[in-house]
Structure formats: structure tokens, C-alpha cells
Image 1: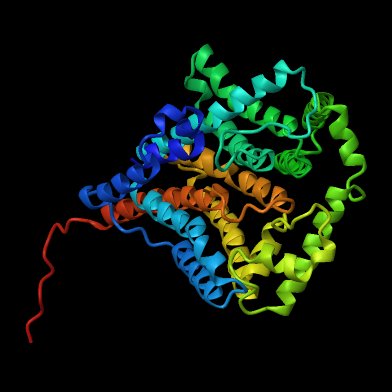
Image 2: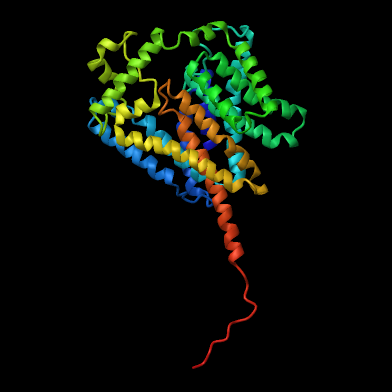
Length: 411
């Protein structure tokens, strides 16, 4: 049921084919997953520090909503976070074995690959040409080209890890299909016309090869890869990079950031209110609106800070930094353990996905999209599976049978 929900949210078949939209499928899947949690005897509560930070973050959202500039707007948008909080807890408790993690990741890859393959074909059919709207996904979280690009930034490193981990056991058809996953994801990033996502892709590729960047083979490979990527990039998109910072879109975003920081400093404790950035901006910064109406600040840190204040912003930054640290920690645990080879390959690239989200998130407002929350769920699942296996092995090693009973001394 949790896999079914995941597929519904990422592929949105009920939106693509309206004939299927006769039941609230997503809600049914969530209720089924919740029911399954209580029926499945293997499900045990998973304790993780992320749980505490997420509950604290939600508490600040609730308090900020009470004292918001417009509380009604805050209350109407509470579902945008608490739904992901519920899904996070369902995932980390249900996906509790390596086999379940493998199946869950397969659903994630299939759903993302469906998007990347169809959209890369669409881009190729129009001759890799530029359009103002870029590439668009189905109605939902990935309809806009910016959000779609971030999903591809999160997807391709994990798909590459999946491919590398399994390539020795694949036939030619399977090899080709799995290789297409990261390739088509990168194609979508190039064709989606999102400058922030393309910059994030460049950062990902540099960091991925940072440890061996000065080897001649790596240098040549990077030059070839960057040449191919630059050749595929439409000329209009190259021109957009040249005018970055001077065009109206860039100027508007700079105003959003500057005024968002001012909101944060004027309301350091709880911000202007959860999801109150737009009404507050339209009320007090009307002269800095260049497109008729205000939008979200196009920056994840400004969005959290302006809406919720410094305490929530600190927690949000801690979540990201702690996720990066935990990924490194789990990677060390799995480094020389053959039984953790699959998890080790995935964990190795999770930080590359996280970096893509953070860099691209400087140009879009995606705090309450699935990217970070699903990433944390993946990470906790990996940590739980590895830790649980280690605990079992430690307990077994401590069970040393006594061959004799020690004699007691008599006084």
C-alpha cells in the first residue's frame, strides 16, 4: 500500500487518465498502509533523531500559524507538511528489511523513469529545441519544469548507483534499460530550461568526481561529458545564462530574497506566519512586485525563515546537515561489508542527490515538496536496516556457552 501511494503521487495516473479518477486513491493507499502497520507483526517503532527534529519543526509550524499575519491561510495549508510527516513515519516503519527497501526503491525508480523517459523523448522529438516552459510533468508536484528538474536531480545519482551495483548481474536489455535511467534524467534537466537545476547538475558532477578530478582519465571524461551537455543545451538557454542577474526574472528573485530576509529580521521568533509570505509581501512590499502579483520567495531557506523565523530555519538547516553526516556514517559502516553492498551503493550517492536539491533549492520554493522528506525517509530506512543487522550480530557474538559452572567458594 505504501508503494501504491508512492506510485500514485509520482506518476499521477489518475490525473493523466481522468477515467481513473473516480476514487480518492491516494487516501485509500495511505489508510491501507496505516492499517498494515498495525497488522504486520514485523513492524516495530523506529527511533531516530530525525523524528525529534521533524516533530519540533511541525510544532513551530503550528505555533507560527496561530500568530500568523493571516492564520486562516496557515491553517488551510497545514496539510502541505503534516501529510509528508505521516508518510515519513509510515515509510521508516514499514520499509524495515533490505528486500522491502529494494522493492520500494524499484517503485521510486520506475515512477521517476516513466517521467524521464517520456519527457526526454518529447524533447528529442522537437529537435532538442528551447521553449519558455521547458518540459512539464503530469499535474501534481512535478508539473512545473523547476520542480520536475529537482526530481531528476534527486533521481539520477540514485539510479546511477543502482545501475553500478547491479550491472555485473544484468543481461544486455536490463543493462541498457538501467543505464537509460540516469541518462534520460540528465536529458530532462537540460531540456527543462531551469538555470538553477542545470547549475545544480554541474555541481553534482564536479563533486562526484572531486576525489579523482586531477587524474588524466577523469579530466578527459569530464571534458567530453561537459562538451556533450553544452552541445545539447539550446542556444536560447545558453543566452539565459549570459543575462542571469540582469533580466527581469533575476531582478524579481533578488527582491524576493532581500525582502524575505528583512521579514525574517523583523519577525525573528515565528516569522510572518506559515505560508504567509505572499499575502505579507503583497501588503508591505507592493512596489517590489514586477509581475502583477507576488510569488513564493524562490529560495528554500528564505521561505522557511520568512514564514517561520530563526528557530525553524535552524532546525531545517540541522536536518540537512545531519542528513549529510548520517549518510557518511552509514557509508562507513557498509564500506567493507559485502552483505551491505546494495545499501552501500545507494548510500554512497545519497549526498549527491541532497546537494542537487539544496543547490537547485536556492532558486525555487520547494520546502513542502516531497524531495527532502522522502530523502530523510530513505536515509532512516538504510540506517535502521544496517543498525538492526549489527545489533543481531552483536547479540549472537555475546552468546558464548559456558562449558562449566564456576565453583562457589565456601567460607
